[in-house]
Length: 508
Image (cartoon, rainbow, N blue to C red; front, side):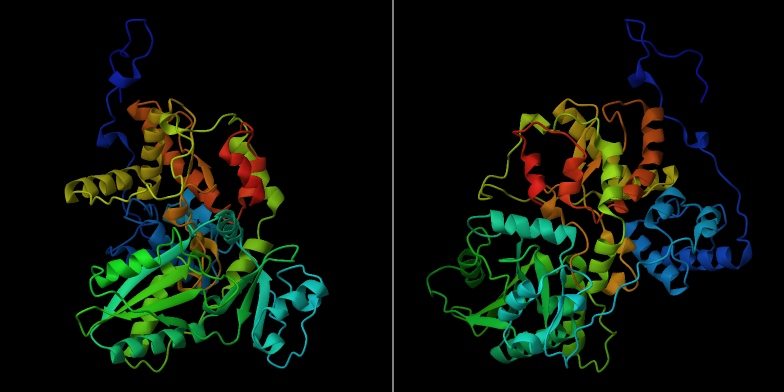
């Protein structure tokens, strides 16, 4: 865009706020060119199917065509099936089809060591546990916590960094549990409820993470222990006739702010059932700990329960959670993680505290949630803007949130937590694997830190914002590559005042 003169402030400096936004024709556009070669043609076919477009050219951009992180998960999985692995950051850094095609096959998956515990094993030794370092005394301590002993142990391995952090907060809480998830259902009669619970048990029998308990007392490092058999824990309670709606009574009685479950007893699913007062209906309250699942886990579990209830005779082979643990523990080294965050965060010498508030949660009793649907017109405008800039909507929203944090904290360089969808690079079958693999929004106050995508988020210059927005996918892609880094690693890369809560990261 050409200007006759640059707008100036009364002091003679460049008035960035007065700079006009670039017109749409200021951005480069390329004519359609058909894919070249077998790999580009294959990749174009996958894009067309995932994105729902008629044709894809070799110079088309994944995000300009409407791609986003959830579709990226499916893309990565389909490429793995074709033995064309690629690092997730490459997709964000090189989203143009011909550039991405040239990078395919450059990434090699982490080799997951075999589980050496068998049903015939009469003892478990340190050499049988490739995903955790334990002494024989520690292993024997674990065995003593499992009903049935060695015969009921399928596997033992370490925690992922995110699980480590969640366990830390569980132990830190003196009352309740910040990571205990609650959901409720209602059934027309007891028979239907019993059928549902039987279907859930079948799903638990299939998936290792749903039969996992956690042990840490007396160990040098926490361990997760997969039981071979883990029957559901179902408690029946009686509700008061004049105590208000049944679902409200259950909610109050099992409020996670006061209620906890034993993490050493698998499965980390607890069910409470009760007859609804004045009705033939039965109510069910489910408690699930975040250590064993995320949103994808719930989706897979509900889909399989539904399939069992509908009489399905064959389900897809379950994907072992140990594969995700292997990716986290055997992939990028902690030294590489620390070097990355040191380069990104080393110049941060004070925390980002919007409105000067460093502690807002307290005991959680005063925390409320609000949801607001975006008007369709605004949603369309955001997606169109992201496509026009050739970035994902997530990249655009990260930059926008950086602007908000910068304005509310009075800082030009800001640090804030973000949700990292770890399944994009968690190995074969990651899109169907039950278990915790990405940071849930409820953990936004937790220390998975990411520098905002623009180094000067407070600027309002349209040209500057455009450049920073286009740089954002590469930053997010690089950060996604570090999704398995622990809070302690991030903490070592940045110096904060001794009184700041970030100091607690060393415990994670």
